[in-house]
Length: 428
Length: 64
Ligand code: HEM
Ligand code: SF4
Picture 1 (cartoon, each protein chain N blue to C red):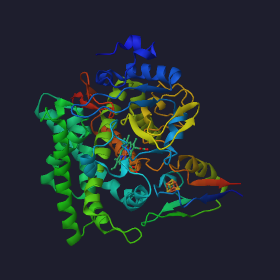
Picture 2: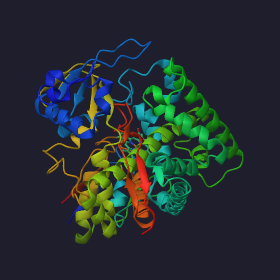
Picture 3: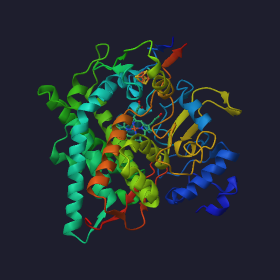
Picture 4: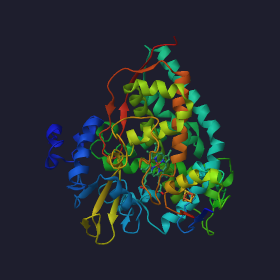
């Protein structure tokens, strides 16, 4: 069944967020539906999407108001992440091993691991990294220029620009050798495809493909961790294998899980912020000209791109007890989707929420998560990557144009582009 | 005099505060937050207010 979006924009009963077709509609249409839900059904209930071979769960509530979303996010003992944060279905036990890391953990384990990994993600560690981000971006853009020049002038903004930058940053950060990188990209695509058959070769059994991808990544990481224990280097893997908190180190299993989390959390998100940022700038040429001319806009512009694109559409929480929140009664076990994309357009918080304004200030968006202990660990790094990338695009590829319709990922969780046709018209 | 108070139980060392008010906050290599200016200068107070707002775990409070 496909949703009739004109009807859905007027009638909350016609909305179904579990319909995959909804998620490939253009953002403006999706936002009309979010606006409706926010206004009329701030805790709208939906049946769970059907997944082959899995029992459907009890359904979920989509939280679309900023105030409700922030209240849930900041009470992690009442609304936990441990039943699953990145999927609507509860995590099957056999997947927990690889995918049940940090992001779907509760205290006290979450606090312990977060303390270890946050040591390696401080603003000062980041300063040391900025030079290498700049080098990576310059190299990727030079390659894109060559690809266009050797071909017919066209590129794919996703494959040629937005995807390689965050992947190379994370691989550098972890010290992944060049020969493993293509594999790492392919596997992390499967992990985050959310079951899009076009991205998974083994179509009949996405679950098996999912598991296999996790095992492959874990294998690469465990090998690397063992190497660093013997011969330490200046990379995150070395820091992870040697860091202690209260006399405890991460096990090789925990390091492998964390690596998978970094790959999925740090790659596709930043990739989609960049690709959809390029798209948004091409749709708003006056904003692009303004930012290009004024580097002092970098800070607010990056925040606005994250608000506008909301690369992660939602995270899930599960009630650990019965209670009431802002007039909504809930029971233990109720699932809530914190729909960041919707909260980021809440009129109560953002003036003219549907206006793309690179100078927006203040901009308390929840694109990196709302208040709470799971707030994006890589937020500083992502901001840096996005700022460096756009400044370099303005300097080195000022002739970049969007040359066709974007091809959207069929995922409710990641607001992503598979392809975005681009053209380099050549230096003028 | 405005004073900054950190709830050590809540702080996860994310460094969001340091990004906004680097003269006042610093997360050291151990991931532990140091408050460099517990009683920030008037100039720094707006940035510190932003940091208090932005702290993901609401670990910071300002006491007037
Ligand atoms: C524009 C880019 C990015 C966006 C929009 C984004 C968004 C998010 C969101 C919404 C959360 C969940 C917050 C919650 O559950 O309360 C999160 C968590 C996380 N992110 Fe990001 N992220 C981005 C980039 C990155 C990067 C570059 C990295 C690492 C290199 C990263 C690593 C993580 C990790 C490890 C977590 C889990 C933290 C925890 O559970 O304690 N993210 N991110
Ligand atoms: S922003 Fe909050 S959690 Fe992060 S280091 Fe500062 S006080 Fe700690």
